[in-house]
Length: 427
Image (tube, rainbow, N blue to C red; front, side):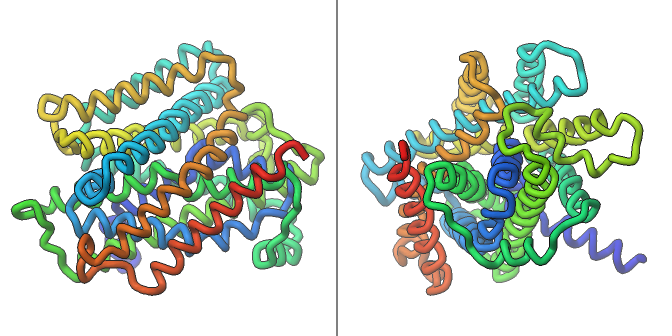
């Protein structure tokens, strides 16, 4: 037992930007999109969870490595080595995508909270916005990171539910390993969302910048250059892999639950938080008031993961802008030393908040946001692949053959999905 305790303690020490990024990957937008594909297409898109895992891992490892090797975020690297057109184009993509994403997640948190407390939607969304801003601005990075790690456990409700319902395991295993494609606009729309909510722009910038934060907290940066060690790079890769693996296990379980519980019950389209929560009813079916308990678990999951993800959205956008404008940037810095950095976080969060008051269904907005991410990520991955392979920038740590092939394969795969979606629209 003591040995197990030491192993758990060691794992928690390893857990860093990769684990946090992976957990944020299954944000409210991810839960809604994975549940929607399970409800709409059954097990038809389950293969994406397995196929995307090596691509997701490779892209995020490249981003983390860029931050660790250069001691700078991606935006700062682009500013130093590329033209202003490339820099500003990248900034527009990341800021717009992140603002829409965090706005949709705030709305989902409000809608989920209404399942358990009879409070006005506007009041709830304003409360969550204020709470997140206070935590992000006035709490140190180390404390906040420690909190974020524990919020990951909310995904276990889906993992447990998978094994509580009668599953057609032969069908599920085949759907996991054998791709199924339907040449319809609905299929490509959702699959673009599934890939986009998995391989998302905000993750690229966040993990790279947080690796720099880790180096600063460990006093590894001297005269602007990181003093890398073999141990640090090994732990970076382990942390990244564990984060992405946990993300895809969560995605796989959510799709399975959506397919088994909702699709097989005739629910093929999700318009509300209450409908999405029904996927968790088998978890508590033997208890009195099972419907309310399912809604409670769903609400806690959405709210917990929202608290995890929204700061990542605003933070990654702020890192990008601050690096491009040469402002002080970092969650380890006090407000008085990084007015611009925290100012961008505040503005991005407030603009995202306003999206919830233009009449968009908060649950449907999550899926649309995922699709937007799926399109925006394509040119950003092209840029990341170029940087990670550049000998001048990365030196001895530039991408090897396997990493390079996987990152470019991700670019082609996501680009093809986006093109297919646009090509089949209106059919």
